Image 1 (cartoon, rainbow, N blue to C red):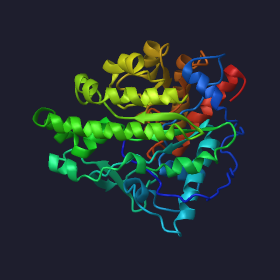
Image 2: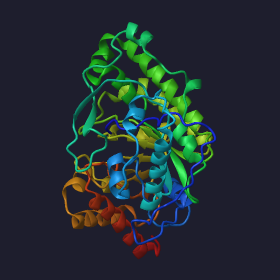
Image 3: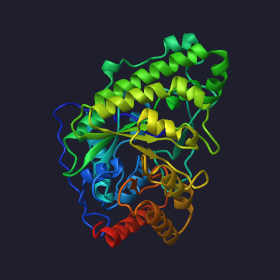
Image 4: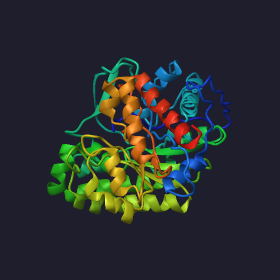
Length: 403
């Protein structure tokens, strides 16, 4: 997924925030039930209504749905993990977190998605954001520099400002922890994973050359990133209301993985296994998000790494129904309403496609959650996003008597 999230700065202890929801934007008052979501993902218990699932929602989508602007420029705290908010900025940061909580509650999710403090400095490029609603002040969209990055040599590696695990803070998670509505939990979003961070630090092009020319440097970068990601998982798994960890790491493109599966097995998967084991030992769920065609390593993700669910699907690669038919008896399948469709068709077409997916993936009442193929992105028309959720509620009422 595109680079959009990170730590919301540092929030002092003792700050309190009460949760107040505005009127829900659906006809049904939300009744969060994380235990139903847990049973659905683990494919346990009696059939029940299909839960909603989303990896994240763009700031632009949150603003459009809530009809309210974020009071601070979140991008500063996303790309500058060590940024210290001024006393004047703290109320705006807290309100921004409250807006995300309110969005998740009102849209009918059983959890609040929230970022961890794991973020590394990298090279970004900007372009004009042409979406219907903008994410950031100034109308810019940020893209990863795929040609280069801050680490190109051993000297760069040694000079890089690597954070110390014991100094990483997860202020946003800790702040939301005591403020989630009844029935909801928190999903800790481990943004960037190991492969993405490693390629961001070098640039995918340089990383690819280095696999041959500087394999020891590649190994060192992946090892350092893996250690930080594993430490992050161990830290956030101790937060009371964190019930899921999102391991988000884009490994693929249309026709396969970005590097050979053997490279992933050597440098990436051992860290995935450690993170998954830590997550499960803490009684949490491990959700694996990866864009692209990763089906050659799907069995390994399920059987060897042990992920509880797979997220991110695209019709052009493999429609979610086919993924569900192939692997749905072994791992939960999440989302899958295609992003291209959501961005470019009518509400009626969104409703029809949503129902088509549910008639295949939702009829068992377990092992599937409804959502987009990637994220609630700002280039999706708000009415199409809301239509997907509303059709899900209608379908649930028809099949399970409850939304």
